[in-house]
Length: 332
Image (tube, rainbow, N blue to C red):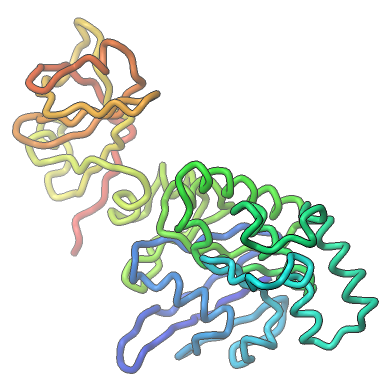
């Protein structure tokens, strides 16, 4: 559905996206993930036609759109604030693009009725955006794009301004709607949990460069680079003292996820002794901040008296999953 062939983007002499090749399939939910300033939003805007490319080729649905203006590309865009017209009703917002395209009144009425029913907001057709919930506003924004016949929707961090609970609800709303309607989604976010929970595949950007493309499990469990390991989820970098005790290559970078460290049962062989520096109880899990031979570690355990009642200064015995250590060769 979307093909990027060796696409690069520059602002003057500054390269903001290095040459990138990528295929996004029909009906796929694909996420561009990375920290602020990494190039993910710039890449989304290049797909939309708002940012020119310095080199390479962009195809959408088999058509070369590299130099096609934004208004002539068959894509819809859902912005962070949804960009709804506050003085218009739901129906008027959804019909706006069709009116601009000079469709007949009969066609506009027919298509608006159809799409409002499809996205489940027909009952709110006469309401203004201010009278809608965040989820309903999101559906209006999606309907406004889909009514134009587009099969590609680009999402520019649409959930970043929402409270945590609403954001969680909206993740499920968007993914369920995308799955039901079958449109291709390209989603930009810096939120790792958001990306992991919603995406069929993800691309991790760092300083304009692709670090890895893969499924959520591939990125989390088998990261290709130290950056992906650190950025996607939490990871302990194993210090030189612990690396030596574990017999690891001293020249390699070694990482271990906090959930792969746990309190060892009494009498466990090869357990490691550590000092508790701090305890964060967050409901179902408890995070332990530890000191092991002067090196910091974080463990994440299921909450229970044996873990949650620990206090700074106490000594604990730890076991770890050696086969879950991620090793990366030292940079040349």
